[in-house]
Image 1 (tube, rainbow, N blue to C red):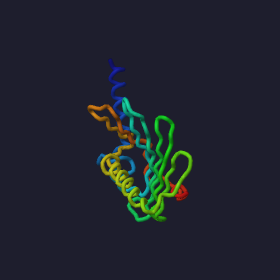
Image 2 (image 1 turned 120 degrees about the vertical axis):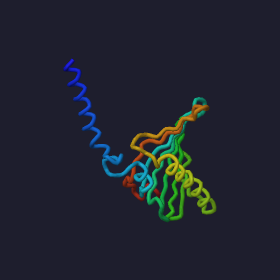
Image 3 (image 1 turned 30 degrees about the horizontal axis):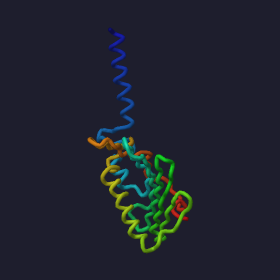
Image 4 (image 1 turned 60 degrees about the horizontal axis):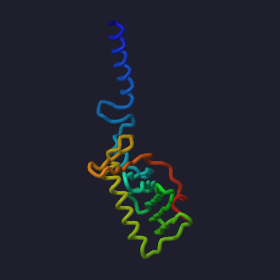
Length: 170
């Protein structure tokens, strides 16, 4: 009986010590910020967004974004599908240029279409940040549709990674 009590008290102490380094009395994590301020205040971000469906082809988009919230914002999106196909896009607001990748080669986006495409993909990125990533707690984020069974998942999230400018140019 005494062994059980000692074990129980020891376990409680170990859990308390482990948590004390991760969460302070304000509910914040060890660096003094919560998930909301980390993502929404980031100047650069890298993450993957995947889609799985019981009957449709699965895919994953990987985002690398630099200079968030500035007129020099740069975004690279790499898309992979379950069948192995690969495509991508780069938007570089500093250069006011963009490129698409069709699986074989990169091609510059015509000036007439650049702003329209950039706005569409920027809106999608903003929706990710403001609707899903803002509450990131360090773990992958998953949304499962309650009736259709498909899943969205955000994972591999890096806040303020060092992203080279060469990643956003061709």
